[in-house]
Length: 98
Image 1 (tube, helix red, strand yellow):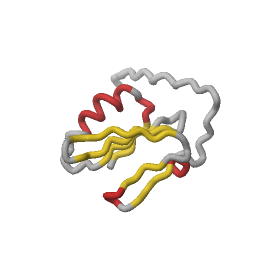
Image 2: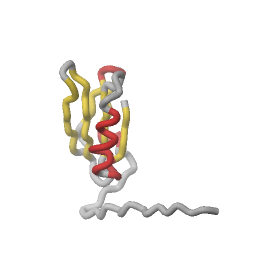
Image 3: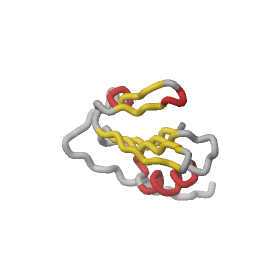
Image 4: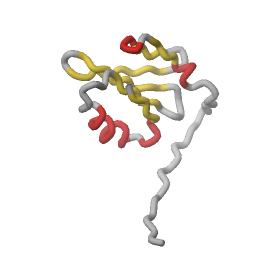
């Protein structure tokens, strides 16, 4: 099981997702939005992965393979959401030689 914040957007939904879904033992991959209570859950089935979404603090993510259920309320405990939210830009990285 892997939990990733959706802060890096397309990278998490493309490159990382593609890479993680090739891991034979991976049962579930959960991607969390950082600005709203929202999760994308990728579950392994006999025929591949099934995509589910959970939205709102009343939603739960069922994880039967480890015998638990996570509520978005618990996951986002202490996070304050605002009516409008601006996605922070990615920091630019520079290589420097010392």
